[in-house]
Amino acid sequence: AREAVLGSIGVVHALRPGAIIVDLSDTSPQSSPALARALYAKGIAWIEATPIGSPADARAGTLTLLTAGPADAIERVAPVLSAFSAKILRLGELGTGPLAKALASAFGALSIAIHTEMLIAAKKAGLDPAGLLGALSLLSPDAVNAAATVEAQVLSGRYDSRLTSKRLQEDLG
Image (tube, rainbow, N blue to C red):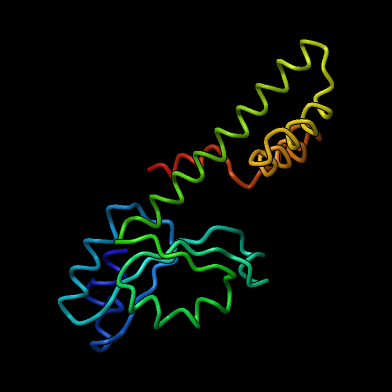
């Protein structure tokens, strides 16, 4: 990213002071602040807009963006970001967008793993796994999303989650 932005033919050479670069990649939490400092020296703002969702979500305008950087710059580009996202959440300083996504991804993966282990134990004990998931959603409403994912991915035998272990490892850096 550094070479593409600041290199000899980087985008910085085509921008004027007051411009804003929006980083929609899943960069590491450490890379954005360094790029931002170099750009700020030239009067250019850098913000993160780490996406949560799929390309189909972007086409439908339903992505969630975890933004970080100067609040005024985020406000200035919000109308453009709203064209492909339903939620724009400001998390704080640069580096917090990718970090938040990594933590959320880890939480989601661990939640699915815990639910799966629970279902294995339930089945061994003679319980109906689908019935237990139904009860869980009533007893613990916060677990509904994870339970729905487990039902769709694990009970169905599809295991086609968009979150692969490789992707989780990339998110966690």
